Length: 385
Image 1 (spheres, helix red, strand yellow):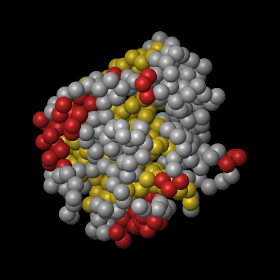
Image 2 (cartoon, rainbow, N blue to C red):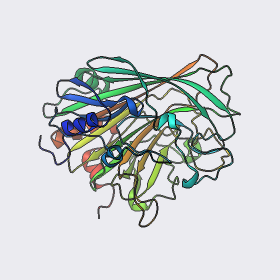
Image 3 (cartoon, rainbow, N blue to C red):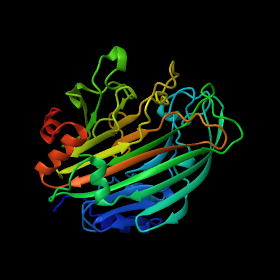
Image 4 (tube, one colour):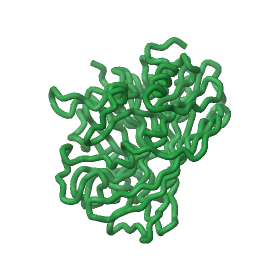
C-alpha cells in the first residue's frame, strides 16, 4: 500500500549505521530493536522493508552523537521507563529540587545506558540490566530488569482482539514483557516510595492523527474525573473531548500537553488513528483486577502519591513560545501498579502494540471492536483547523 512516510528499510539502515539494530521478522511484519537504548523497539512495519515505518525516530539527535542533559529523546515505539516522575517519591528530581524543567533529569539507567542482550531469536529478543535508583525522599532501589520483546504471529494477534482476519488489512503486532525484581536487601514500602514499570511509545504526529482512550462511564464521585488534563497546564478545549465513553486527544505534535486515565476509569486498551496514512494503532496492556495504587507523576508535592494514572498520552510541542519541541511526536503510555516488592519478589507488565493499514471499512470494524468507536467518530471528534 502506498505511503508518504519513511520506509522501514531506511530507518533500519540508519539505526545500523549509528550503533546497531536487531530486526525481528515474521514475513512482512517486522520490528527493529536497539539494545543501546534499553532494548527499545524503535520502529515497526506491517508491509516488509519497503513498508511504512510506524515509529518516530529522532535522527538528528542520534546522528549527532551528543548526549543531552535532561533527556535524550531518541524516539521509539516501546521504551522502558520507570516511575514516578514527580512528587515526593520522584526518580526524575533530586532531593530538594524544584519541580520544573530546569531540575528534571531522566535517570541514566533508563535514558543513555544500554541493556545487555540475553537472547535473540527470529521473532523475540530478551534484554537484562541491573540498575540503581534513588528517589526525591532519599530511598534507594536496587532493581533487576528483564525485558522480552516478542513479535506475535498474526493469528495470535487477531485472536487476542477477538476478530477474524480482514483481507485488506496489513498488521504488525508485538509486545514487551517487562519484569522488575527487588534485588536489594530491604522491602520497598509505600511510606518511603515505590516504583512502577512505565512503557512509552513515540509515534509520528499528523494534523489528522487523534488518540482515542475508551473509559468506563459513571459518576465522578465514584470513579474520579474522566481524564486528568492538567499535567502541563490545562489542555485547550479544542484539543481534548470526552464523549460517548471515550477520550479524544489531538496527536498533531503542535501543543505540549498530556492526559491521564486513572484505575477506576481505564480499560486495558487505547489507540490512535491517522486518517492521512490510514493507520490504526492499538495498545493493550496489563491491568490487574482490583489494583488501585498507581504512582503519581505530577510535578509537585502530592497529597496522594499513589493516586496516579494507568494510561497516558502526551502530545509534544514547544514548551514555550518560540522554543523548539523535543520532537515533535505523540506518545501512548501504560504503567504497572506501584511495586511493593519484598527482596527477590518481581512484578510483570505487558505492553502490546498493534498497527493496521487497510481499507477504511475494515479498519472501522477493528476500531469499533477494540475501542468502541468508529473511524468517523474519531475523525470528527476534534475541530480541525
